[in-house]
Amino acid sequence: MNNVADKTSYWNPYLSGVMLGLLLFLSFFLTSHGLGASGGVNRIAVAVEDLIVPEHVDRTPYIAQMAGGDRAPLSHWIVWQVVGVLFGGFVSGLLRGRVKVQTYHGPQISSRTRWGYAFVGGALMGYGARLARGCTSGQALSGGAVMSVGSWAFMLAVFAGGYGLAWFFRHLWQAGE
Amino acid sequence: MAPFDLQASIGSTGSYLLYLAIGFGFGFILESAGFGDARRLAAQFYFRELRVLKVMFTAIIVAMTLIFWSTALGLLDYNEVWVNPTYLWPGIVGGLIMGAGFIIGGYCPGTSLVSMVTLKLDGTFFFLGLVTGILAFGETVGYFNEFWHSSAMGRFTLPEFLHLETGLVVFLVVCMALAMFIGFEWIRDAVYGKEK
Image (cartoon, rainbow over all chains, first blue to last red; front, side):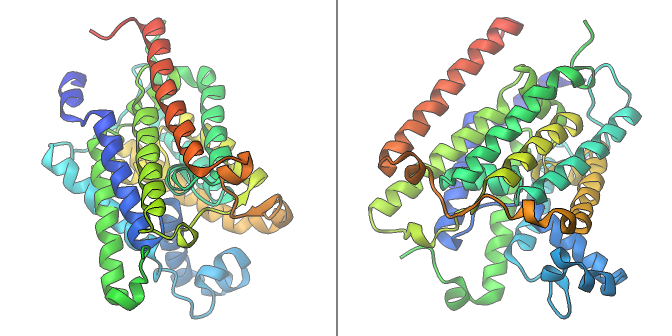
């Protein structure tokens, strides 16, 4: 894999952090909200669900508050932000020649294995993010910057979970001994 | 004074365009930082690469400092800024599940969007899982609603929790972040040897 070429074309992490911090501040300053991701995905998914099984949406309280009756799940700031993230990520990748079909996986596993684990990890992330009322962006990053106690506790829990389990899943990411 | 009443100043179309633009910047920065690549994200948990820690905590201290200064200068009304309400235990349990999802799946929700849109198949499978998990939560939260609303503390900030001045807390968080950057690099060098 061409790690060297990749590495030089990515931004320095501290520069990335400063840019992200400025954007986060601007977002709070202009709109009173920070950045988010999982909430937007949630609303888009529920909007699709509402097209297919509207009665079920009306009967299930958690999703009814977004899309029940004549509520419009997409009329919410976070949906627009998520659409923007898709565009921004695409344009950045396009400019650097990184838009291409491929699978990122550790040296010890196949693409297929990686897909399975990615799906399972995604499902855990989705469930956990709704349970915690926000994801790494909406809770840890945004809530962390405005000093929410719950967001800091959440952030510690994410890192604790990741570091606590890293040893058991090292074959997914690390080279063989 | 900021934050502004967007509905009144730029209308709903203008607001949506603004959110679209902020999202664009967010996606652009995440991709530029290398967060469309799960290997670089997961490497954080083996101390091999520290991008996640560096980007995230640099962003937090920059935004936090600017919010504190603009509040002190009377440009921003901190009381109008959205502070995630604290639901302590649901947040901690959700965070632990997400930590597991991170090391197993390699992305978080935002980074998976960027990965998927640059045509990474692992990012796409992660996203499909993400939607599944989100929908599953909506179906099952009814069974443990009481827990989901437990330990509610409302808008509860670090200065209130620590009984310290806000400026001092900002200073301490900045010091903690810098100490973490140095400490984690030290661990990385000890485990993998100095960078060439």
